[in-house]
Picture 1 (cartoon, helix red, strand yellow):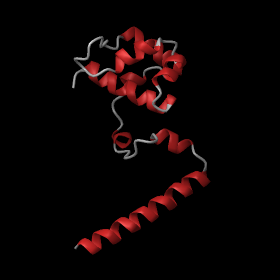
Picture 2 (cartoon, one colour):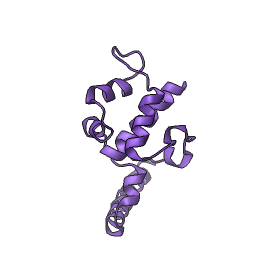
Picture 3 (cartoon, helix red, strand yellow):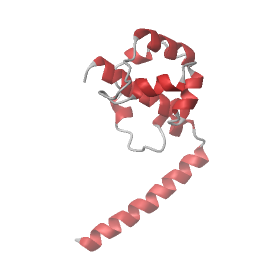
Picture 4 (spheres, one colour):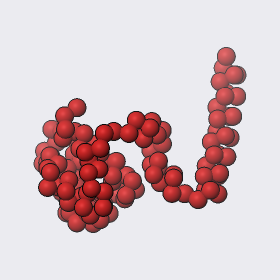
Length: 121
């Protein structure tokens, strides 16, 4: 994976964390045109694809007050986060009651899942 693909992946992570995956909202936060964001996160080989330049990185990091974030090595713990509907950061920002509700739901689902597996065996 080259540096531009790493930057693209990191930008997608920021869009998820700061704007719940909404590119238009993220574009407003970092003072870029929504079309620019779409071009920056487009898959390699997509017509109109733009590489994420140092200037764009500086602008995004400056607007979000996260200087140097794009230069940080990947966090292996963060990469293990299994959920697509929310980021680890969003989970951490939840209050205890919401976290308890999520855990209760997961316990129910896991119990149901393992019961089904036992029946199959």
